[in-house]
Length: 352
Image (tube, rainbow, N blue to C red):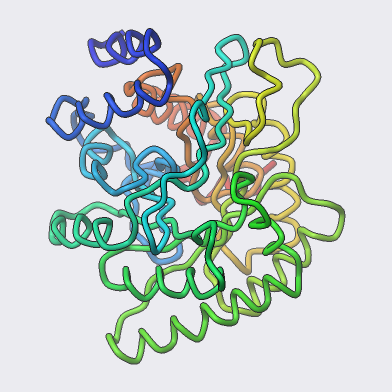
C-alpha cells in the first residue's frame, strides 16, 4: 500500500464531505500520486473520436469545480470528467448529505449539484489549455431554473472550446424532477435544443466535440430502447450507463443504508452492468457506451467492457481503494484482456 493510499484511509476519520475537501486541497498542492511510465498499449482506445491512453476514466462528482483534472490525469486516469456544473453557483442540499457505507463498500449522496457555477469552472478549464489529456465537462441545471433545458444549452455554449467532451446529466436523483427529462417527449425536447446549440457553435467556431448522455440505472421496460432511439436521432455520440441508483438492495449491511439519495459503489455493479448490456443490445453499435457504476477492480472494468462499454468510469471506489486503485485496475484489466486472447479493448467490447 502506498503512502497516498494510507493517507486516503486516514481521511476516514473525518466527516465524508470534509474528507473530500481535504483530498481536493491536497491535490491542488501537488500532493497527489503519479502513475509512472506510459500506459499498456492494450488499454488505449478511441472514444467518439477522442484518443485515450487508457480506458479507465474518473467519473463526475469527484472534481465538481474543475480544480484538479490534471492531478487526476497524473494519477493514471485515461480521461477525467469534471462537474456537474450548473450555470449559477448553488449550495446544494443541507448537510449531512454524503455517507460512507463501509460494510458495503458503497456511498450514498444527496449533494444536489453543489458547485461554484459556470464562470469559475470555465476559467479553470481555460487556464489548462495546451496541457494535454482528455477532460470533459458534466453539465446540469440549477434547481430553481425556470427553463432547465436552457440551462443545459447555456452550459454547452459557455464551455464550448474549453472541454474535450460534454456529458448531459439528467439522471441525478438529488434535483427534484430532473430524472423526468429521461422520458421520451422531454428528452426529445432537450436533445433537440442541444443539437441546435451544437450546430450553432460548430458554425461559429468550426469545431465539434462529443456529447454524451448520462442515464439512471432505474429504467423501466421500453425506456432503454426509447432513450437509444432519441439519442441516435439527435446525433449525440454516446451514453454513460449509469448514474447512482435510488434502489436499496436487501443485502445492504451498513447502518446508514436507509439514508435518502443516490447509492453508488459495489452494490451498483451488477445492476448497472445489466442495464449497460440492455443499452448495448438496443444501440447495435450506433452510439458509444461508457460503463459506470460499481467499478472497483479489473474484474468490474472487464465486465463493463464485455457488456458493451468502450471505456469505464469510477469514483466511489476511490473512497475505499485509495488513489493507487486506478493503477491496479489497469494492470489487472490488461492481464485479463491478454488471458482471453484480446489484443485491444475494442476487441472485447460486447464479447459477453
